[in-house]
Image (cartoon, rainbow, N blue to C red):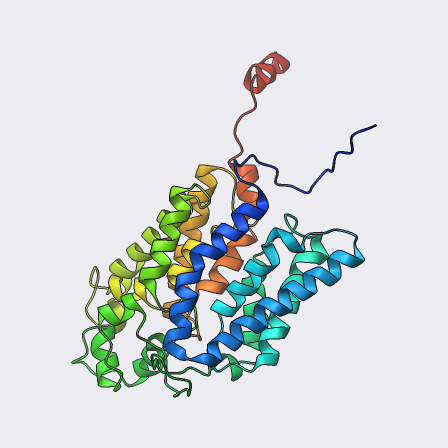
Length: 342
């Protein structure tokens, strides 16, 4: 009997774990941050995450049935839905979540051939699509209220920061001072633990870091991307971040901006997506620096408070170019070129 060999789309690389194992491991490492979001924002956030996962898996199953490709069990659609749920505010309308999930799977993932063929992160693409389509629904933030069901509306630290800059006074020396002046007292510990308004799965930097470290230790996530992304962003904030407060160079509040918004979620779990990130170490470092720089530009000079999603999608565009620019030399290639040049 002839053995059938299935040729899959690029990039092809060896990993000791199967695709299914990788997807479910990443989902498991995200679980603590998700449970924390449910605890802090109430039952409504559980509905949002469930809707995202169900819509993603159902879309994957339907398209897999049409294309005769059984991929729903590999966990990739579940992970996409989970990440979409993580990137949603607790009070977002459920239909917006469903649209984001269907767009991510049907348009971004399957129109390019399915898993391994998409050129941008499906979950981020889904989030950005619904953000600009239903901006009001995507900015319905709720205050943390551990263990309760009812939601209480309130702004995110980055959102308050963006609006408060318009009325900046000379006495304000940094983001925490500004938030305090705006009536939104936030401490570094609140940011670190996740006792702040925000998207469901992005608020707890602590749990995201712990989950990311597990993936780095297991070599599922490449440390080069994480370090270059966070390091470059921190550098830009430290050097130039103080100008908006009139404090000059090297005075930016690195810790505030590192722990705020979706930076940890993006750097650890989304910029590191195997399909949409570079293959070589040099390419990963350049890619990470690009993500850090773009996040800094968008967060400090853009019209929206956050810049992680757009920054990563922007750098996804350059991944094929980075793979080509930093591809390793083939064995014997230099000698062959020298011989041909004689």
